[in-house]
Length: 339
Ligand code: NAP
Image (tube, rainbow, N blue to C red; front, side):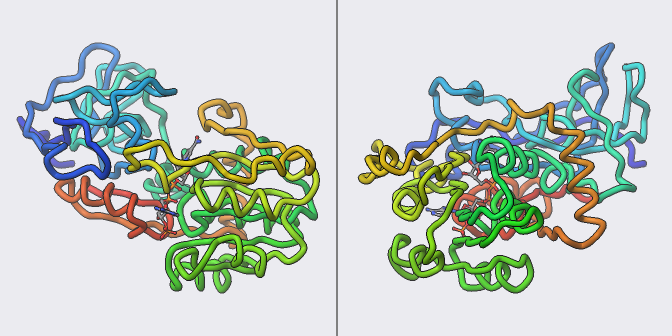
C-alpha cells in the first residue's frame, strides 16, 4: 500500500456553465488529505464515474438531486481502497463503492460506503454494468417499461452504458426484435455484431424517423429513451398500440440554452394508448439483489457483454466528462487513478 500523502487533488466546480461546460467552469485543486473522523474511512479512489446527470447538477436549478456547490468538490460514483479507518466494519484494504468521486482521496462516512468484492468483478464494473447504469437499464426495462417476451424494443444511446445493457437484456429475455441507434458506424457495427441487436442505425446518417421505420417495419412495443428530441418523436410514430416508453434521459438537450420543443406528434399517444413514464434509478434499489444475481449470471455465461472507455489520471477527468457528452465513449466512461 502506498503511503497517504499530505495533499491530493480534486475537481471543483467554480462557475455554472451556460450551454456546453468549458475548462473555465472547473478547477483541479490541491487540498489537504484529512484523517478520517470517528465513524468514517479515508478512501483512496481507484476509479470514478462521469455521468450525463452531472451536467444537470452544474446548474443552479431545483431537481431530484441538489446542484453541485461552487468552489466545492463535485460528487459522483467512485470505487476505492480504504487506507485509514475510524469505523467499525470497514478495515484498511477493503474496497468500497461510494459517492465522493472526482477526487483522489475521500473521507467517507461508513454508512455511505458499500463494500465491494474485486475478485468477483473488476472494481470499475461496480460503476457500470454491475452498478448504477446497469440497474437503470434493468429497472427501466423490466419494471418501468413492463417489458415482456415478444416485445420489439428500440433503445437510443444504444452503445452507451445504459443503452448497451438495455438492448442485451431485451435480447436475453426474448424480445422479438431489438433495434438500437448510436452516433458512429463503429458503434452500430458493435451493436449488431457483438451485442446481438437485430438492427441498428447511425442517427447522424439521416432522419431518425425514416431510419427507425426501415429498421422496425412492424413497429415497436417499447422505446427506451436516453436521448429525447427527434428520437422520441420518431419512437412515438413507430410505437404499436399499448406501447410503453421509458423516459430515462434526454442527453441531446442537456446543453441547450433554450427549452427544446416537445414531440410534435404526442397526440398519437391517445389513439395508441401509449404509456410514457420516467425512471429514476434511486427508486429501484429494492431490485439490487435480483439485478446483481441476474447480471452476474449473464456476464459469467457470456450472454451479456460490456465495454468501458477509460480515461487515465485525475487530470483527464473533466475532458472525460466532456467526451461522454460528445459521444467519445463506447460503454461506461470511467476515470481511473492507477495503482
Ligand atoms: P452513455 O450512453 O454511456 O454516454 C452518453 C452517450 O450519449 C454518448 O456516448 C453519445 O453516444 C450519446 N449522445 C450524446 N449526445 C447525443 C445526441 N445529441 N443525440 C444522441 N445521442 C447523444 O451514458 P449513460 O450513463 O449510459 O446514460 C445514458 C442516458 O441515461 C443519459 O441520458 C443519462 O442522463 C440517462 N440516465 C438516467 C438515469 C436515471 O435514473 N433516469 C440513470 C443513469 C443514466 P453517441 O455516439 O451514440 O451519440
